[in-house]
Length: 97
Image (cartoon, rainbow, N blue to C red; front, top):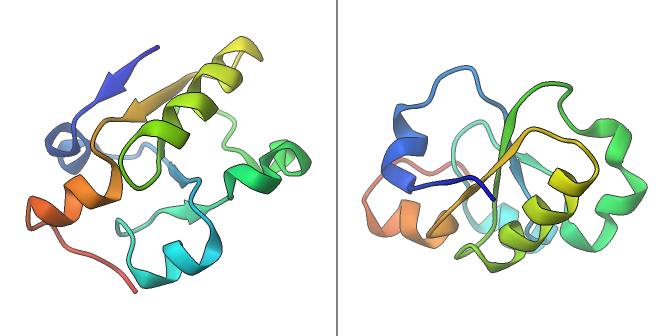
């Protein structure tokens, strides 16, 4: 499974970011530009995933890691963000609400 740090995520350009946390978590604060497709309903929304390479994030990296593995098995070009949104916030990076 491919993974990047929150520092690497900050430097990435033109790579979509899918946040798999639940809507209430997403509303509390997210990496700017992230789209919310919760892990709990993702199976019903595979057609909404980006067509090219994309990154997956959650709170700390556990859920996004499981989603990344499952999507890789389906042929998606996907990368997990280690440390997740909590790591992003702890690093002092900007947050959207």
